[in-house]
Image 1 (cartoon, rainbow, N blue to C red):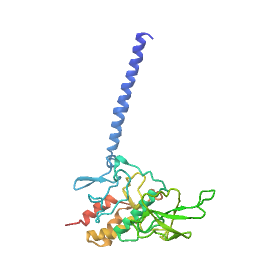
Image 2 (cartoon, rainbow, N blue to C red; image 1 turned 45 degrees about the horizontal axis):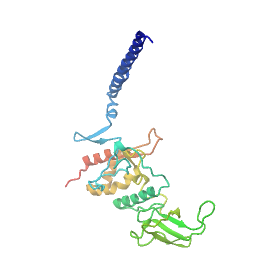
Image 3 (cartoon, rainbow, N blue to C red; image 1 turned 30 degrees about the vertical axis):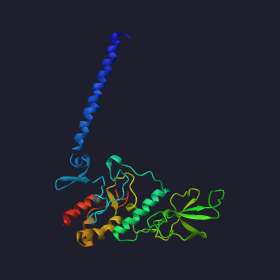
Image 4 (cartoon, rainbow, N blue to C red; image 1 turned 180 degrees about the vertical axis):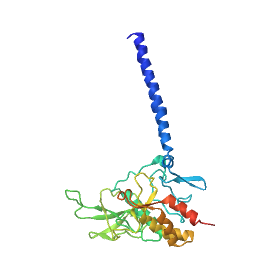
Length: 284
């Protein structure tokens, strides 16, 4: 290759670099920014920021916690659903937990959250496959097994999620004629077949599913109408107003299904709580 050919090739490459830099690095971002300034798009492009008293307090699109410095729910506010994003609703850690549908840890989380929500709202927190103490109702069944790995004749049965230090007795007295033992710290029950026990809880628990499970992103700003309705009485007491007054505000922030058939009706927690602060502020 001659020196002149070398210069022509590299000069052409440099010109292409400069042109593409101007087009994709300057012109295109500027065009997108200008489009975002169009009325109706500007708010969304800026993150749908919500203000109170002239100061930004959150986004319509990202949920947040309404708790005190110790992580306890503030009674005057509607509570969001649980979040697995960082320490809760961290936009930099968006995502769900890695717990699968058959995870004992997930079951324990759901059961303990159901008890906590029920205590806060003064309702029944029982749900299928949960003990009354808020643990997963799971037994480790030990004994000879068939070809599929299922225990044929139990010789020993242990309640694996509730240690004897926290309960006076197992949640179940016996299983297939064998007395159920409490789990003891340090003992290995991995040889047992894990058997979840449904129990007598209603199929449709009082505490709804979104009150005890996190969303896939961990940033969901909405809760179900059922979870919102469950919290009305507590919020009304904390704000010293009637439940009907709170329901009147709640009705303004219920949204239906997208396009009339996608998703479920829901309530934006931040917008609802801000409106309650304006209408019925907590004093003292």
